[in-house]
Each structure stands twice: as C-alpha cells, then as structure tokens.
Length: 228
Image 1 (tube, rainbow, N blue to C red):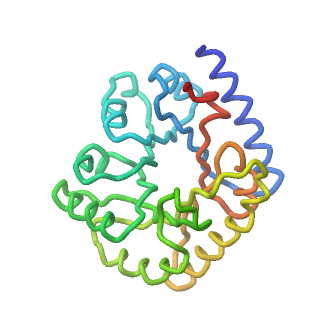
Image 2 (spheres, rainbow, N blue to C red):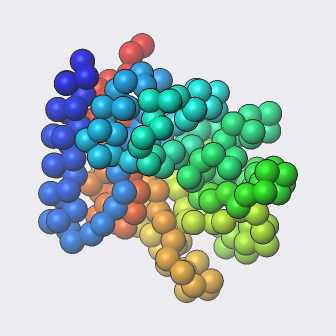
Image 3 (cartoon, rainbow, N blue to C red):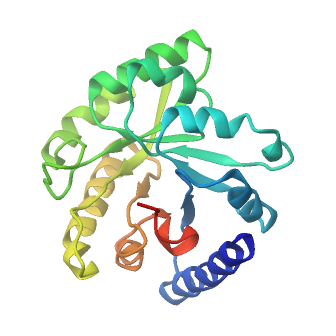
C-alpha cells in the first residue's frame, strides 16, 4: 500500500511539474491527507513533499503532534469548516487556514490569535460559482470585506480560495477560475502585494493552473479514492 501511494504520488508529481513547465507557471501542490493514515503521509514526506491539507480539526490536532513527523518541515494547511470550539486545535498551528468565509470567523481567529500571541495566515473563501452547497462569501462582497479583514492585526490575509461547483468537465470551471483571478488582480491593484489563489482539485487542477492558481488541493490523484 505504501509503495502504491509513493508510486501514485511520483507519477502525479511528474504530471503536475510537466504541466507547470508547459504553461511556464509555478504553484504549490497541497496533498489532501484527510482521513489518511499517518504512515502514508510520512512516506510522502520522505520523498520531499511538505504541504498537506487537513479538513477535520481533531484529526489535524492528533496528526501534527505525532512524533513520526518530528524530523520533517511540514506546512499544514487547514481546509475544513471552522468552529469556535475547535480554534485551539488549528490557530497558531496551521501554516495557512484556507476556509475563512465570513468576517465573524476572521474575527474569531483574530481574537484567538491574540490569546496565543500569534499572527495566523488565512485565505478568504469565495463562493465564486454561487453553489448553495459550498461555503464562502460572494464575489460581490469581496471588495467590501477585504479591507475590513486587513484591520484585524492578528491575522494575515494571504489571498483567496474557492471550491467550484463540481462538474465532470473541467472546462465548465474555467470562467469561475478566471473570475477568481480577476478578483485577486483588483485587490492587488488596490492594496499591493501578491495574493495566493487556492483553487483546483484532482479533476480540474490543470484548468485552475491555466487561470492563475498558485495552490491546488489534490487528494484522489495522490492517495486514491476515499473509502466509503
């Protein structure tokens, strides 16, 4: 099983890097490791992979303190739902929280960051496809909300994140990803700096990269299908 995952990872990494070279871009590959055994994650660490995404706060808590990771410089990304009673597990411990989808959640994280004397990097989640099943602020809200988030001194807004409405055809996501890139360009022109764009998953990562993703979140193509 471990060897199979290592092979899948190396095969996908080759595909990923080849595509980046083809379009002359750079991006971070986040291996979505939710529900995956620690041994599987360690095997990828040994191959040099550093960025992992976790969805569940308590699972995240247990994984990051596991001694098997002590010799690796891992960047843990939290990509799940944020709950007030679970902040202690993720704030100050995540390299980046991708799923801040309201001012209230940003303020919660900011207040907790003050308590633990940290500045927590975050992404603002945007519901670009207006999917009622997905979290995130609307594209129309972003311009008003972004400067308010910048006033919170114990969070650092690194960029934007989206999960588009699923489609069998990745091309159906292209316009949403274009709109995300345009949003980031507007914000960069107003406030300066360079924003991260976390968008794209196993089925549509190439389209996301085409349209400016700087981070893609890939699980299935690395770890295989989730057990049901």
